[in-house]
Image 1 (cartoon, rainbow, N blue to C red):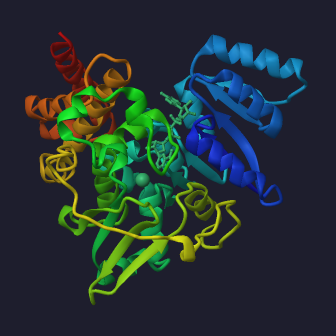
Image 2 (cartoon, rainbow, N blue to C red):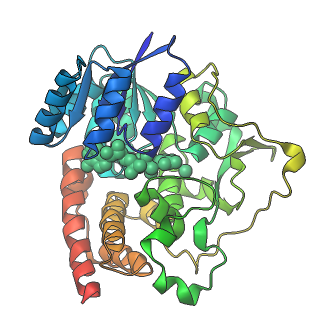
Length: 393
Ligand code: NAD
Ligand code: MG
């Protein structure tokens, strides 16, 4: 039995992970579940799974949950605070950690899992965008097994041999596919009027609100370019993007001989999650099978950088001073939160990101350690929220 800790179990990826685990109760045991605010959902998950631990950041919410669980005869111990996430992610009894927290808030527990040498299933792309080379160093030094859960990176991982030391010699470049989100064909002049609900209505995937907005701006793809650079140790120019509206081809590896390897399937996160859990084996995921006869078309087009100005920031920040991707991620988290709260317009998300990158100059020591990067993250958020305030006037 493998014991699994799910960070962010109440979110979209967290719930899909439990769905896969429910199909394999003979192989996996849920050791810990954590959430941010949805205590009722966490309560229901604890009753169903009876994990050894649960965690919530807020101490009084955690006490309430503990009482409710005891009242219901559930043996789960509830921990409180951000430190609890690191403790659980590195717990000696944990085999695999699903990192499904959204945003830079997931970095610390991801690092704890990496340093403790866990099998780390990484959905939380922001953690890698913030931590960059230092994150990958922690994975190496801790002897962790890092498995991509983002569907594009899982696709590339599935196209490559198991031994990473063979990758460099065979890859010319990788191509991340992008659906283009809900506004691929919308008149750009109307993008300023987009509402949060319109931005979150993704054509192919049902996801949390932050990643849904990122998909609409294509900042999600920008973060994924940065993620791909680190996961596969490729220079920025060897990570490319193509629009593929059907989300059937999940990404591709173009080899040195121009042979192209692709991974296909219905858009369902349970496939990369099941592969992350069972690698190098394969287990049932619950996803429906692709029906080739009813697939009308698979189409591809170049991304329109005028429609999606944020996409270019991936390569710009990767080529910029170290720490630039940390600044971009922090600005974007602030900008998306402000858009979802109705404070700024959809098209102003990019303005906040671009202005924050322009305004901040990064000293070399600000990217010298994880603590320094976290301080840079805080400084970038302050700068971004000033831009938000200015735009909101
Ligand atoms: P979500 O908003 O649905 O869920 C986020 C989870 O994290 C929730 O359980 C929430 O309680 C928890 N959380 C939020 N803020 C937290 C904080 N500050 N501290 C601790 N816990 C916190 O998000 P999601 O769509 O499941 O995405 C999770 C991550 O996976 C993101 O990084 C996203 O980019 C990535 N991802 C998601 C999908 C998808 O299909 N949803 C696909 C690829 C990658
Ligand atoms: Mg993705």
